Amino acid sequence: MDYITIKEAADKWGLSVRRVQTMCSEAMIEGAIRFSDVWAIPENAKRPIDHRVKNGRYIKTKEDYATPILKWAGGKTQLLSELIPRIPNSYNKYIEPFLGGGALFFKLCPAKSVIADSNPELINMYLTVAQQSGCVIDYLHNYKNDESVFYEVRAKDWMQCSNIEAAARMIYLNRTCFNGLYRLNRKGQFNTPYGRYKNPIICNEAKINAAADVLRKAEIVCGDYLDVLGKYASEGDFIFLDPPYIPVSEYSDFKRYTKEQFYESDHRNLAKEVDRLVDLGCKVMLTNSNHPLVYELYGKYKIDVVQTKRNINRNGEKRYGEDVIVTTY
Ligand SMILES: C[S@@+](CC[C@H](N)C(=O)[O-])C[C@H]1O[C@@H](n2cnc3c(N)ncnc32)[C@H](O)[C@@H]1O
Image (cartoon, rainbow, N blue to C red; front, top):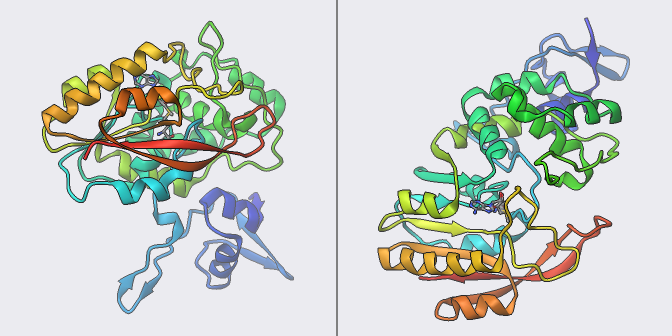
């Protein structure tokens, strides 16, 4: 039988090293053996169930909360502390048609939601994780953080893969490529180089399972935001719009998510759609860069400027910038 270290098991299960060590000592991990000071865990050991029950109530731990599966350019994790206080107290459905990594969606875990993106590979990944997370996890275990494996996997056409392989491939490339950047060349092929990270977590089972639980409750759609909103938005819905930003710096690469780009005319059409949604009785929250066009398009709504960290420049360095949050309610 092959064994792994506590650190490897912790990464695999999305638990802290300390927690896995405690669980070994408490005989909660089947087959774990101790050699002098060091624990060895069977490679095929099941993730232990970690119900921390206090006074008869289950205490949620970090790994019970859903967070984005992918690192995504323009991801809103950094901005959650600004977004959450602005969310309406009550609403019917949650709709997020520029989903990307879905930071706000995973944070809210809404009971009724429609989530969508125009990137078919991304949507296949979410649909497959929702329906077959165990198979995606099993597939991910086939991959290694190795440059030649990376380029071999990258060279595959995801459309020729099974849904499970395509989903696992997308997660693998995202964890091991440079900066987690999703970039396609003119032919629509993924072309971000290998990231050279020492020990990236390729398969965080806890994260994938927690995300799958939330995704299963959502309607997941692939399509253009106008079609999605036209079909699903109705009175009382809360709509979060996080489109590709209007570029403010020479390094901005936000337009290269899919083969299609998001131009100024698209921002103008989006503003018209926001007006339509407001007339329909929806509450809309929108984010963008702090650019003059935003004031021209959304001047009649509330516009707040907030500080944000960005790390999408060429050197992967963090820089501070300003975002705006527009709310129509
Ligand atoms: C800024 S990202 C969203 C980031 C996301 N809020 C997060 O937390 O990770 C914008 C997303 O819009 C998608 N997108 C671009 N043009 C679109 C369109 N016309 N319709 C729907 N989605 C589009 C891109 O594929 C990308 O995933």
